[in-house]
Image (cartoon, rainbow, N blue to C red):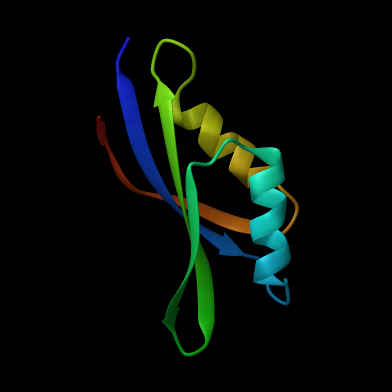
Length: 83
C-alpha cells in the first residue's frame, strides 16, 4: 500500500545501440526516468527509475520485465526506497 521508488542499472549486450535499447525500454515499460550513463572506457549503461505501488506489483516483476527486453544483458538494483 506504499509508493516505492526503485533505480536500476541496465547493462546492454555487446554491440547493441544504447539509444535504441533506451527507446525499447521506454516503449515496453512505464519508466519514470531513463538516462544514459558512461561508466568508463566507453562503456555505457542505462539508469532507469520506476515508481510503483507495492500492492500492485513488485520490484522483481519490474526487474524480470527489464531482463526480457531484447538487448538487455544484465539488470542491477542500485537503490530502492519508500517515497
